[in-house]
Length: 398
Image (cartoon, rainbow, N blue to C red; front, side, top):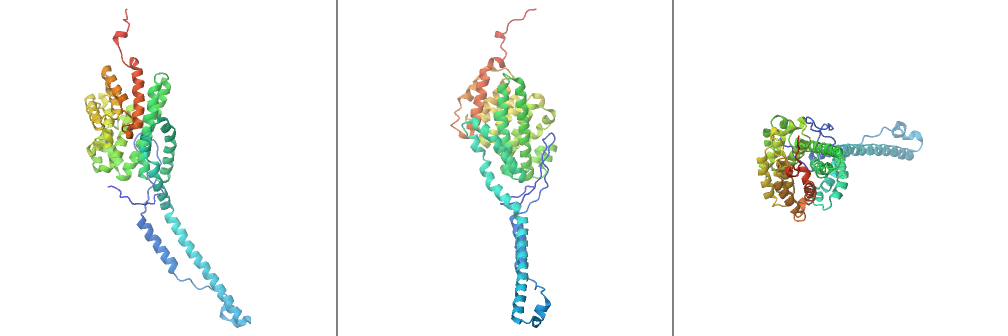
């Protein structure tokens, strides 16, 4: 059942979602109060503290009860009145301080949530990065922002916009920079390439965990459902969840494709169900992005369910939905399907089509287009090393 959202929630703590083979995450018990709950409590406290009569002070009986004993009735009355007033003021101040203390206790977390909810939409804006024309600027700035978002999530573990941005941000950094750097390093330093691939895979798993937390906060028990029967579990999701379904499936799929670790490969049914559900709810999402993720998934070996035919179908649809303005389907299909099958001519044609995409024509894909074009050019530069050509091989005689 979906958790309803309110404008302000007191969320001093939250809970995490654990998945087999996931990175460790903090475990926070969750407690939430809505504005209505807080306002009702505070109203009662203020009403009681402000209308309750202040008890009469117990002052010296000789002064109040027998003023004549002092020899000065007037001064005795003034002294008694002063002591009574002083005591009353002290009690009044204490009662008001009680209100302040209780209000602070109940609203401290709410005020923090208000501050977080005000700043996160400004910080967690992926469009600022995806439309950037200088990839190195994103490389340098994105890590700081991701750590800032993680600091926010440490204080507000269920801030959904922060969770979704953390998922997309770590996926972006792992795919656009660490994985691409690994591919480029393979030509000169294979050890360095392996190190970068391991880092990229760790980023994908980290991203997956944030998206799992986002889905779990919307639908309690969904993470466990993905393990048991992913297709049935995802039937509770709707069109508002497509972004998270896609990001989760993409991050998880990249982690599998780049490691092929048995414990991750075992999660393939969940990944397929996530992307299938996203496709069912909104095939056009982000101009064919779901089809793009499925190209990578279907490029896996047939032993784990990959299919070159299905990859081609997703490729064709991704190109159609993006109007040919997204370079990533060309590169993904060329490297995932055509390169292993030694189809060099078609491989080269698609990579040149990727290079022909104008990054400025669709600014929402500008950053990724520039990075995929860099990948395409590097692959073309090393084509002779990637494809076996019998004509250039010397005959080996016994």
